[in-house]
Amino acid sequence: MKPIPPEESLIVYPSEFPIKIMGAMHDEFAQTMVEVVTAYDPTFHAGKMDMRPSSKGSYLALTVTVWATSREQLDNLYRELSAHPMVKVVL
Image (cartoon, rainbow, N blue to C red; front, side):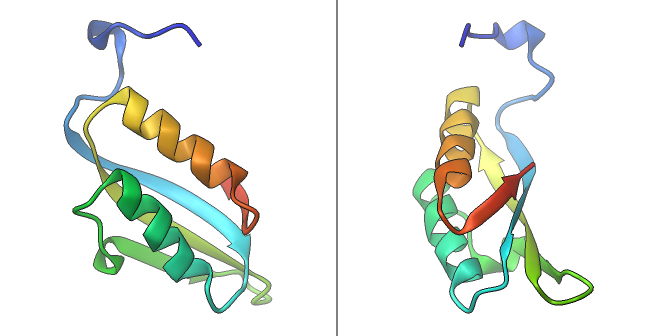
């Protein structure tokens, strides 16, 4: 992927950045995602996460707000979340 010059980025770094993570309802889903996100943002904690179950309770949507310091950080976090076997969608 070709790097985007900072002046062309739509995101100002550093800043808070929300990421939505969706996966099947599982007892360990939220805690596992906290552990993944914390590897990229050591200031992250469960208090910075909103949880919303689907109407039938089959899925859980998490919105995590990370302290984004660079595009590289966000790209790497998105890649790891997207590749995780518990995750269905990352937005």
